[in-house]
Image (cartoon, rainbow, N blue to C red; front, top):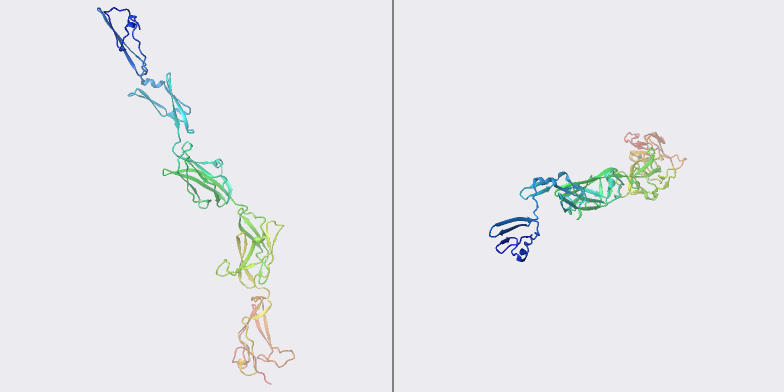
Length: 470
């Protein structure tokens, strides 16, 4: 800045510097004006000139003054960023601060991380960096089970799941929510059992819980298992795992016993042949069963039902493999298993499986006539006393088989009683009443009762011998 040469009666004043270099003024130079170091620093400069004739004054303001925002400035402001959702973006002019407020900044759902925002107004711009974090837990996702989203998982009863059940807490946009100590539980039907059971699970620092691998025990068919979480006293329902439980073709569940149900089980006879099959869960016949693992026991049916008593009888059986069937075994004849006419319970055991059969033992062929109660050997005398001449009293005879079982219930006939001597030529033998050597009695339904027979004097109703006269 320059000035003209002045004489000594001239007064020049400048207010932006405390000292004036007179040499510079004599050369026509005003003091230097320093540029402010702050954009907010405004400077006021004044120059006054006075001599004997005139007084002059001039002033000016300088600095980096920024133009204030106004409502019309809103249209020139823009906000940009990768993944920015501008649908709810709102800008508002703040009269009291002469600024613009920007609200509704949000990003399209995505993984957490750093995001940059660029604010532009006319030719000016500035950047800020924000860090996106996960929201509060709102979902429970199952990890490492992608196929369950579309279909059910098939497994054999008693086997393990192919993968461990691992769950992850997530926000509503499926971002992992690293919230620890959140309780995780499984819900299922009562007929579905998971082993191990009764375990408590909570999320770790990453919001993740590993429930491990479970063994599944359930009836065949479709079953479901659902994972749930409890967060802030609210239940977060996880995915539903669909399980299709298939029967185990190698697990024996029952015995299939076939035999001739029309066969008669005679006392002292032999068993009919039994065909035994071990049936698996899928109703197929298990092959290659060791015959030595099959056993058979039998006992009389009593009030204890079909529970074996302490004195049960183990029956030795012979087993052979039926090559023509290739899947079954035959129970061969095993000797006389029973001799009394009773109802028996017979059990076949194999691989801890049991099948019970109820067998009614029938009498065998009639072979002998026996008294119901064996009478004592009679002693008779040739006297008139009836008691001394009575052979038997109330005698009950029946037909039995070799095992003393009453049989021949369909037989009808006659029993002939004969008094014989020690030899056929002996003629001095007692006679029956009526002076006869033989008597006949009716035989009905395999038995006969000899209870009444009249003597000469009609004094005894018994089977007697009359007195013999020389």
